[in-house]
Image (cartoon, rainbow, N blue to C red; front, side, top):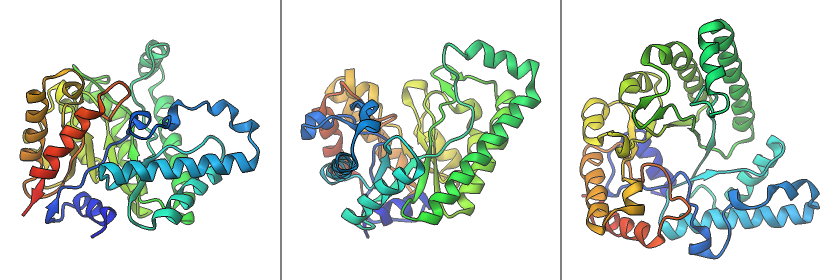
Length: 317
């Protein structure tokens, strides 16, 4: 099986032999690993000034760096961050990676259109709107989903993309920004509509949110994504409990404590890795990952040590 096929088997909770699939939502340590800036750290403000020849060089460099990361760290999936501009620019990046790698890797990109935690500058105004004009807020939520599904239809017609990571964050470490009742009114129906629409188009869906999801976990699962990411242990999310409650309904991704990878001891990091594998693997439906991403400032050696344990112990017989 290719890495892509193994990733899909895990999303569908089918049994696997061999190593548990692995990916990271973002791998930011490209400078340390390959001597190249990550795409998000480049000055995209110059994109409009580039000639097409320069843009094509940049696209090629992006595709090569995505593939180098996947190959070096044995990722089964690649989360794309397209260049600014039209949807056609996204098509070009998808086509280039497929041209270079075929169907070896599962390709996904951001596809959420639901309300997440508002920025600090808009938090008060958004909270007031929920009370003062709830129907208008819900109409806007529905319009955002409709727009995202129109966008997904064009991506499906073009081909090459396998799925979406739905990256609206709903929760802080203490719990969701919205109460479970508010969440059921302003988010869940639209999340369910978005996921169903993407599924109907043939895409896989991975719902990402950091923080303590436990008060809204039932609603997230009922929205019917293929997988939940990132199962944040820093917010008290225990993969063993989530697996016990929902392992027969949704694939689980993550739970390796990225905070410990940054600031913990070697022993604490190793135990977090082993805990995630020990409780995520049984019965399939698990993809090995940190509880967020491999972010700027983390030591590459810590990530490599995490992978050493995965290679030795994250293996189905």
